Image 1 (cartoon, rainbow, N blue to C red):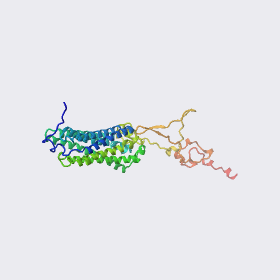
Image 2: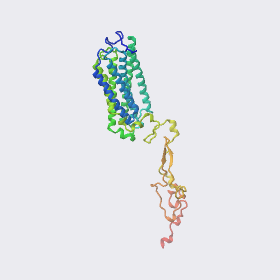
Image 3: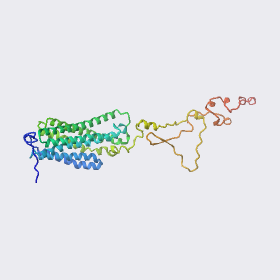
Image 4: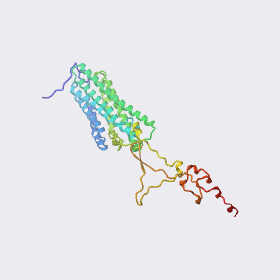
Length: 409
């Protein structure tokens, strides 16, 4: 038995003719449907080419949702009171921008890490993904339930309650986009007032022109999606019977076009091409296994810092040890490999090679003594070195320094 689509009646329809007072233009909606469909294989290629699977998957799902939504609107041309077609149209055009926004949110942790770990706003960038994932889940839930009640409600009160839930979902989407832009702009402000040096590991990426162009395009796409959400909030604030909600021009120019432009921008400037090899290495999912590329220990808790004291050795001996005899070198048989430098444990538990101090400082002052009167170095001390030659311990008597026979001979 064939199921006949349910239709709203005069008591539940927003306008007398159904959900919309105009007949949907097949040319405009067909163009939108074809444009979104063309972008799918391009994103599929870039996702495989640059291995940005999750990012591209969210964009493709958003494009598919937009295609389904515009197909539902084309079907409403023949039956403007169909609740099923209205639900398909609203659900598709709600889910599409939300999923595309979720793909944009994935870029933020990569941007935080690529300049250096010391610039990251969070201890683990995956917290940023979790934060926006919660926004996306609640946005999709409120939008889906709201569309269900607004399109299939039994009475006016139930449909009005559905519109309230739908507006809540749109407000969550606007809040998530605004939070993304605010966090990103704050991060860029911190970079402009930085007190650290950028990590040189990825400088070939973040100094390239295509990376900076991609960041600008990402902001532009987010602003276009914000415009679309604001227009829908204004159109549905007082129900579906408002002038904005029943205007086909507003729906085409300020509702569908911003989403299409944002999709084209993200497709023409893929994130994988902008990040190149750094996309996988800056992923928040691989953060714990990555080490600090600058070689400098990051700030650690107090308990860890107290357990690992940094050892600093003096390259030259002190003044007192300058006059001591050099320490004997350990015996090493002929042909044996040279001794390795000592290892010192750094605060990050990484081995640090430490060069042993010099035996004798190049700036050390060596006293001059006659060859036949030079006592062994072991008999001198720092105090005795400052005495006059006839006052030193072990030196000859003063009477032996001058011989009368030698003067008058």
